[in-house]
Length: 298
Image (cartoon, rainbow, N blue to C red; front, side, top):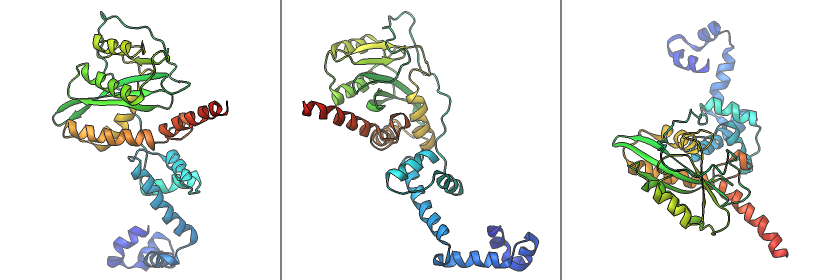
């Protein structure tokens, strides 16, 4: 109503409009005075104004994908004490909302004649430590220059992305490049029981890919074709948090740069509920610290 009075006061006057709207003119004038001099605002109004700035900052700094729960938890991590219901109220006033997951799109092309390793995971996508289970998947992105494809390798322990690659072709080379990055970054030990799980896409059951896994001493595991229970991270996360919210995309290079930024944020700053509302890197640091201390004590 205040905005309505602001818009029409010159033509009709404040008092006549307030009479029609059944509100006291003093209410409008008090609001106008607080707007002209914020120091006259109530303590709650001033506190809300400060919180709005912090909430908007957290939302912007996290790729505009956090909803109420994640914004509230991030504020708590930063030492800002606020009720969750207050965050919900202020985000609604600001028109801010988190990313909403869509139905995963099937991108897998399988070759029924190609031999496949057995499923060693059986939809149990938890791991007791880093470098115990890697999950691989890829998704597609529409650009003005045509489709490009983004491949990922994720360590299941803390859902950390350990390898990724963007390509303009669906040939097996780009998923192999993502695997090579993961091997270089993580340097898993042979005989340590690392399992690599993917769907039955032709890229993952190609001879070159399976030979590289064997060379690195990694056990292959293959699930169902396009099974959303198996490898939904690429579709549900990268598409929801990056592709749909930041497009349209001009080129492969634009997608590649955005993915680089997003992977750094996802690994080092994104709060993940399944691992205790901390970032993947922090979860791995905690694991190594807890398992180093008993060894040192011994």
